[in-house]
Length: 397
Image (cartoon, rainbow, N blue to C red; front, side, top):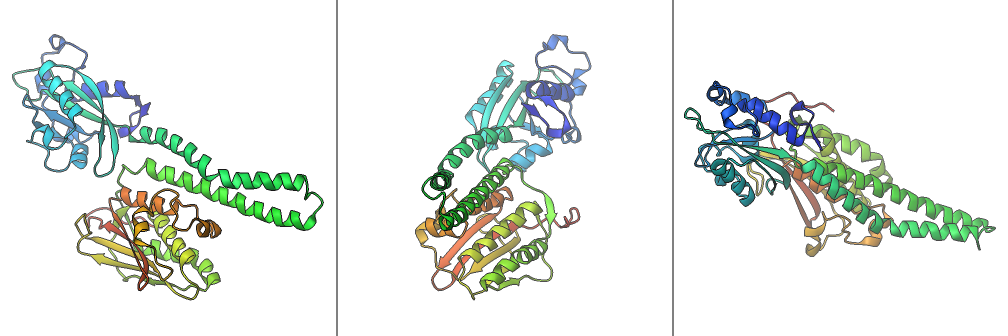
């Protein structure tokens, strides 16, 4: 596996040794007696130097207290990291054992660890002992190499095989049956041939949509652990979703009402993925909403995002179709979960749209809520954090 963090293309283990050399001026495989005499001065690593590395780095003293950490480490573990025992931020037994062994025994090790918050991520933790010196308080360095993408690739391969074998079996069986019929009993039946070819076209398009959604879901999951940080104009994305799906709504006699303030704060995100969220939610609302009844998109500021905190935006897509029973609501974002399988397939659903929405919202560290009742219809609401006002200009569509 080749890592590309920070723009350096080096094999994983070699790159960690290279990084140790850059930080401390020594090789972790080289005995301390071979160090040049000016090493103590090189071990006083300024925070600005640490921050140039894209991988999280933590420097520990002899008591396993974090004495310094770079920006990437603070982004991963939070602000209360320095001057606390490592266990305060990293409660992983294998990681703590590796750190203690590096300090007490001078043992170098590589340990796979899994971090569950804010989303599940996979790392290789490299614990590097720092040779003791009277002028240096650093006794160990921990470097966390993100291998989440590689892990997801393996998981996606397994999931893809399982999902494709399950979901494509029915349309493939139908196509095979029609082909056999057209080659046999119905080969001279013009009316039957036309009817079967129409059905075969529908099934082929269904398989194409399913493959497109599986690939889209795989791409989203591969990036879910990387929080996007670019400013995005939500009002523009909502207007674009309405305009793109407007003709389909007109065919069904469903008005799309966009209720959006003239000025909305930007959010930190990925514009293409957020557009996919709103497109999927609006598409669902049009599929399941009754003809003649409007679908509403409403955006507004909120002072506090539920369960997360902080100011942000709430975008709700509402339709007045049949209510969804409460027992189904928690499972709507599961892959291939359908409340009414026959109806979903008849209207072209793949059972993956809401799973894609969930994973994109997770990547943005936002929140998805679903409410449904016979009196008020069904609302899908997305909460997104406001973009810091002092940061860069907005991403244009």
